Length: 291
Image 1 (cartoon, rainbow, N blue to C red):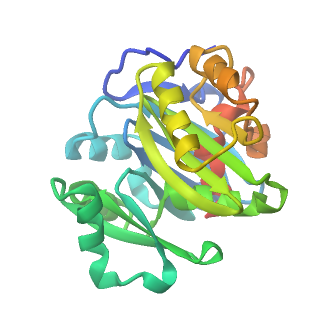
Image 2: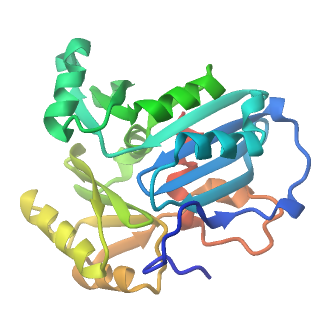
């Protein structure tokens, strides 16, 4: 079993992957490619169209973002530049985003809004997702140099922000949710949190952490900020966290209703004789169901 806390970070270090020798041949024209660019990670997976089966996947942790050469070489070495998939979806897991009520969204104000909140040190390509069911627009930024490489290799790819995927998935759960709900998605060195109260999004944010105490501090601050009751709120956790880790154990001390969130799609991983716990993959594979 893999340990995700206190792992030494090297650029492009594999965390999870299928075994190449076990992969059966498949027709790229009958499959979709999903590529996720994170703050400290990079991942991809391939889904077979007719069965919605995950054929292959790789997850890496990164010390620094891909350079243009590294990114281009990686995609070409995996023969992802041939554009022979039925669809390519690029997921951007970046911290530069703003949720705006749809009625207040103005395209000409996107740049000003992003720079006011996140600064202007990095040149960004601005994109947006229309979240009609939430009556919001997610405006987000992607490093321009990275975006240019991606669009050169995948000119017809669709782009979506990870928080838009979270919200689409959460909307499907609203009817079964309690009044107070917290979602935690763990990645190398940081986690994304979504707080739902009375069926409304209270906050979506990324937090970097080094210790379990950091995680508890951030979450207790949020419970105080939004007047959440730690004895009744439901907390669902997924991503790169171990059930026997210090972080998970500390969470169960402070919050009474903590559960690991699994995704049914992981049941369809093929030729994976020793599958990792399915909650590892929940944040990664959500996009296959929501895009």
